[in-house]
Image 1 (cartoon, rainbow, N blue to C red):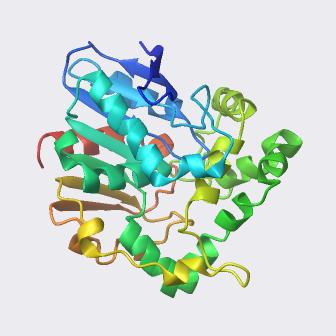
Image 2: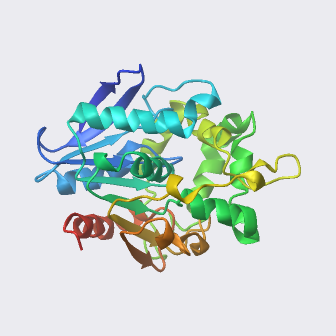
Image 3: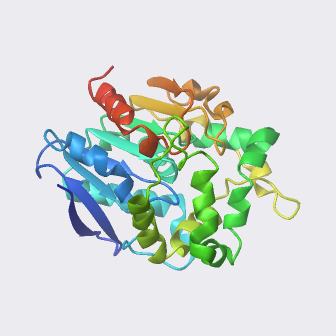
Length: 300
């Protein structure tokens, strides 16, 4: 059974959370991406609830969590501070931090900065900052695949996304076969699931768009080539945590070039490539994702 609660953090941010399992049990934390929300982890929370305390927060800016208006409030240091404070409040360290998409961006930073807060990390289709920077600077394929990021930085992005019953957001799913039962993993975007998404999006889209506005990691344009001057020293992007990376190979936003050379920044890594799966693999193959988390927890 899924519980709901609000965690008020010492620095004034409140995160609306979903949870399952007994308080005091070993802790698993699940971080979602865009345009998703904590509910995408419900099957994982229920799967692991008999052995773990499982918590999935809505990140700041999503659903009923605090949503500061200014983009600067969504810089990495603030997002990481939220999860550090939540982990302490929940009685960490974590048995595992499991993260997808933007949640993974937060998780990579947390693993680099405070590895003592987790025993292991599970990353699902979320680019490591060093390989993402490399591909944004040098890969035309990645630049084209990430062009949507510049759209989401527009001042009118949230208004455009909300038009016609969120037509542009549904396209993110449909372009990858989410509602096509003939496609492996397709057919998950049912009307009840769409209603869950509508409820989240109606609560506000500015927070989600602000993640893109605050990040320097987006494709260069004629008007903004700041990403081309960025550099990351290896010691500031190396995650010294046992890490299990699951990579759906049909992710059109995150081509597989992003996992080339990943081992240089994640020395304790197991990489599992999944042909035929898309960016929405958590929805598409929940039993498979649960098995991958089990393998990570077992130290496989």
